Image (cartoon, rainbow, N blue to C red):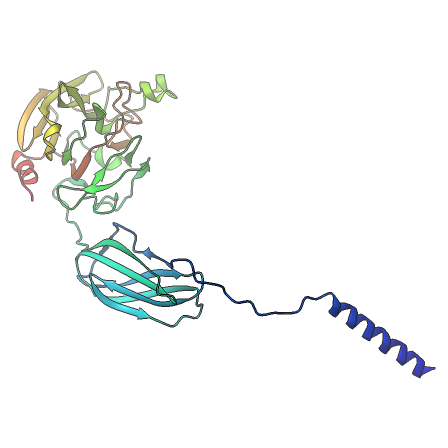
Amino acid sequence: MKKLRYIFVYSLMMALTISCEKGLDPINSVTPGPDTEIPEITITNPEEGSIMRVPEGQTTVTFNITAIDDIELASVVVQLDGTQIASYNTFKDYRRAVLNVTYEGLADGDHTITASVTDKTDKSATTSVNFKKYTAVTYVPLEGEVLYMAFEGTFTDAISGIAPTVSGYPTYGDGKLGQAYQGATDSYLTFPAATLTTTHEFSAAFWMKINATPDRAGILTMSPEDLENAGYPTVQNLRTSGFRFFREASGPKQTIKDNVGFATGECWNDGGQVDPSTGEWFHFAFTISETKSSIYINGELARESDLTAPIDWTGCDILTIMSGAPRFTEWNHFSDLSLLDELHMFKRVITLEEIQAFATAR
């Protein structure tokens, strides 16, 4: 009886095994086919146009490179400024290689990293990325200076270390010195204004290459919110405190203006004119003392206007750079599409000599 039971169990197991095997496809080798695609290679670090700022004059950098082929990679060669720094011809994954190439002793200046890939049928591809390396020097502010922005790949204030709130998509362009802020539609920076409103004096100095389109724009503004028109940003135009430094078209030229609020009234300073069609950089500065509003163009006094009372800072909690928005917009003083560089701000009146030093810096 036991023998019959064992024979039955064994027969059942064999039957199940055979039935399972009949349901499986045999494993066959598959040829990869012809190599028809050109390989791909990308550099993910650094990014095109990026700037490395480190305290050291020379630094170590790691380049991140990815190479891909449809069949099989043969080699990857990496060059820095035309000199080979790495070469690979064996890969764990023969279709995809993720490489981290470390280079020691990178010096200041403009650099180009180039990576080339070749597959087993000698098809190849090359890509390059341009970047810069600077030695980061700790900025020592001048007397009373509370904000300095060089725009060398960052919008961070070099004095406070505060990064602004960025609205829209401003970028960087070729500056008067190095890189500059490049304005864009509906784009601007805002900073908290607490450090700027501790005295009744204020100054700013900077370079601009003006894009006359649009024909008017806010440049630097510190205004209170117009509570009567809260929720209507296109009619924000309360001028009882703070200041508004802006530009407006006057024929083919641009008039550089300032408005200062002193609680019981306001002061208008129509400054002077510049011609954007020259394509030149212009240096602007303005100072607000307890008695005067003064505008300087290229190191020379353009115009002064008398203040009957010191500037009032009530409600001025934000500084806007390169727009009138969100607090000075009723007359279409929106974003400036110009280039801005070397922005200095002070909680005191800077002298003519200091302004001329900024204006002649190269």
